[in-house]
Image 1: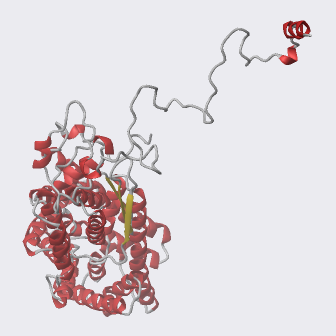
Image 2: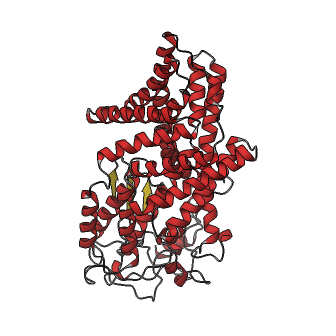
Amino acid sequence: MAEADGAEDRKPQSDEARSAFTTPHGMAPEAPEEDQPTSEFSVPDGFATLPVEPGGSAFAHPATYSSHHSPPAYTPGQGFPVTRMKESPWQDRMRTMLRMPVDVRPVPDRVYKQAEDTGPAVGRVLDLTLRIGELLLAGGEAAEDVEAAMFAVARSYGLDRCEPTVTFTMLSITHQPSLVDDPVSANRTVRRRGTDYNRLAAVFRLVDDISTHDDVSLEEAYRRLAEIRRNRHPYPGWMLTTAAGLLAGAASTLVGGGVLVFFAAAIGAVLGDRLAWLCAGRGLPEFYQFVVAAMPPAAIGVALNMTGIDVKASAVITGGLFALLPGRALVAAVQDGLTGYYITASARLLEVMYLFIGIILGVLVVLYVGLQFDASPRPEEVLQIQQRPLIQIAASMVLVFTFAILLQQERSTVWIVTLNGGIAWSTYGALHYAGGLEPVPSTAIAAGLVGLFGQLFSRYRFASALPYVTAAIGPLLPGSATYYGLLLIAENELSQGLGSLTNAAAIALAIAIGVNLGSEASRMFMRIPGAASAAKRRAAKRTRGF
């Protein structure tokens, strides 16, 4: 019986009984595998492993890790010129670091403006950063400068791994303490926007002090920010209304008006300003405020034309348009577009379009009513601007001076921007009237000088460039081309009217692009942190669309 069993064992098995995965005869079988398969990420045998707390994860940081004392970020072999970084204005320093990837940004000095054992108060720092960014964006600052200011504040309080994001009405910021910690995000919506360059300058000083000095604590920053919000405007309401009238009067003189036209334009602008304030107090949108504000100057111009008095009545309407054209919003929109912030640029351009349509609607209604009462406007006199160099230069400087008051600028900056505007108009007059150059390139060159000088002034004083630029472009605004196009449309000459409005839009874009180009050209005269020359400055976004 035993021999039969042995013979049965030696009998070859069939193909069905054999498997490619069975252990060959005569070899020791392998040890049984574990229930879970192994991975190339598993720790090899013989290596010591760190103790893992109960409920921990493979992605959890060790128990001895502290986000306040994280290892330094990667620094390239050539290093960063820290000395030159500190010497440069904070706008350039922060803009340069924002354009770097997070992992190659230089690590800030670990000087927290609070107790060392607690580290940065992340929630309060993010809230302060958003509040400062809200004031800057509401004041008309470009999106790139708002992001730079937000990054400067967060970085100064120890939050170096931050990513601020700015759109037209929304600000957000995300902080990730390390690669293994959960990110913290916060956002804030800009509900109201207003023009107060005095407040804008105060916010820039606060950001400069926070990013430069180590003794500005969170409590001190909050206190100063509350004072900035409570500060009253530097000029009373009656002075603003008077400035609006003088601006319109100076603009009418700039396009060939006399003494009577000056006072008529001033009265029309004052009435339009008061009506706009009345509409704002009743809660009407800004579109209707512009419609109402454009009507009184147009009505006074049509009335002068109907009386038969030998004056240039068209200059009254043109002067009123200078006070309403949204040049500030247009410059900010084009600047955002050129620096790669396309969503914010699109929203601001849409805002400019709505405001411009409001002005057109208000003037067209008055012109149509005047034509029904047999008014006889003379379109040819709009383009017949008498050359009076000294008077026009003086009028341009008065226009810029009053425009700066309307923008609520600091008194110390009013005279600088007035001089900048006078230089811009002198350049335009020399190129266009004396040199015979076309209006669009002449305007672009003059606006380029405005942007160049304004950027140099702002960097010298570590302030925003808007107070040195916005009012200075006032004399270059296309008031005459706008009114000429509206008048032709009212007289049923649609094709010529649209052509004139297109010319006005081209001049406006030339102003915006010239200001931005002048600002960028100013960087050739300044130190750029992290680069030997301005030629090595990183591009804002993509290159050639790729």
